[in-house]
Length: 379
Image 1 (cartoon, helix red, strand yellow):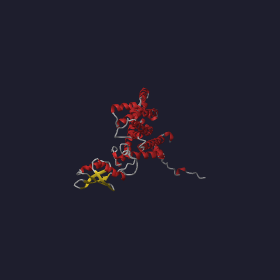
Image 2 (cartoon, rainbow, N blue to C red; image 1 turned 180 degrees about the vertical axis):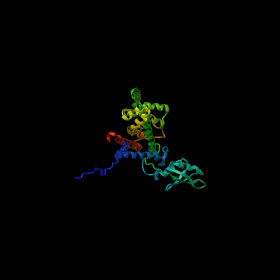
Image 3 (cartoon, one colour; image 1 turned 135 degrees about the vertical axis):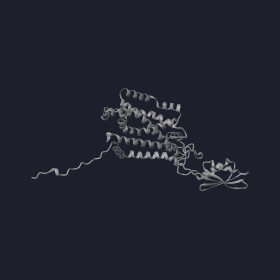
Image 4 (tube, one colour; image 1 turned 90 degrees about the vertical axis):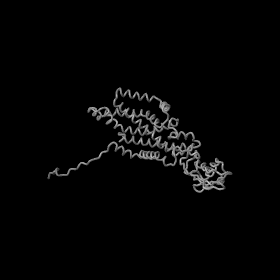
């Protein structure tokens, strides 16, 4: 029997296994959540549309078309051919001249006017003042100036979402309102994040009497009616865009502070925090390096859930008349206007409501997806 020499046998080489960090694992789990990813894509598209869209619609958000008040939504260009001749006659009747004929050729209208006296060529201004015509000029003169041939271009416009009761393009105003609502939602959430994380982390890590006093202050602020607080701010500082997100953020941070405090109390008992304390690291350093960074998961999830709350709150305040001022607008303002005119112009309520509802759904789906992805117990 021959003894086997194990020393000459090849030894298997160690295979390196690449691990995944918490964030890599969370990203993989988030990508697997189709609803959350679809919501994220939708929110990006909505943000880009609200930022770029008002510049591409061909209308200003505050531009008023007196000839197109409460125009229904549609793809057809305005004015319709049947409306052009009556509109030209109505515009020139103010000049007290007789309209002999009106002819339309493509996007150009030719009007022949006459009077017993020579007609002032400045009569073309009456066509230019209308929302339907541009570049009006005198093409010919006859009978010693008592008969003029006027030529003007027909200004074709489209209102895909219709117009409001004043005559403003609803598509442009809906996209512009999205800027305001999303900006208030994000900025107010950012204000609540800064105040809430700082307050909650300091309170939870300090503990004892400091924690007791800081949280009693939060309880007192909780007891104050939010609407009363906003009314006081409006009375003293007036209604403006900056005040809105400061007022909302100054109240919404209370929930953030409580959540962060609970997480900070749990984190300060961890071994790495106790090791840092034993090494003489200051309280501020521990908060910056160990407490706050490890709060990122719950804070990010709560932020995505807070943004729709803030947007709804802003919409509610705008519905009550405490929100942004005209001519600026938000989804809440548009919904309030649509609710007042729902019987005659239902599109004024339908389109802003659809934008608001879909955005809130997307934010909630994204928040749920982030919660599932960042929950270490669910890995």
